[in-house]
Length: 150
Length: 101
Image (cartoon, rainbow over all chains, first blue to last red; front, side, top):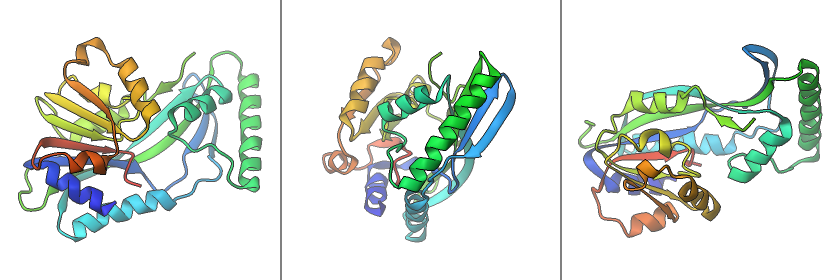
């Protein structure tokens, strides 16, 4: 990871900048909406912060080593909406962006139970109900250390 | 109904809050199916968008809007392989998108 960031620094023009985006260290949220009303909110089961921690560490290391300076940073919410749980799961499988494969029996059981509750709430809510996964992300602008303007 | 990703435009808003892309030469690492690429490429001078997953690049190429075809190049390649064949000081902006892990 740090080697990749060193290569990025090499490819950047001296007055260029890197925009780095990765998930924050918290579980994504599953929500059910009916219009603007939130009918249900719960953390997605089985969240593992290992990869997100590695991303945090890599960003911190390149700053510590003097490769980049973090000029500005912030956070934003990235929601993905679907009309049903299967639709959302199909989408995750298609884009490979969300690991929905079973890893531990207990986690898979909690997910299955959550999907069932979400589908029941959506059935009760009727037409127009939506399910969404909300992922929170960290975004930062990093400037090459020696010429820290962008 | 189809899947809607970030219809509120939270991600591009955060991106544009941090950097100006007007006329810039951009490298996007981990572009996936181009979801974020479409949001800023119209402002950029040229975009090289790479991803190590062939399926994602295929979808990105299939879905590229006509008006962006002349300025966006999608490549199926891992970043370190791409970097090994690239000259130093080439890009004004690099976006490392959900890939630092």
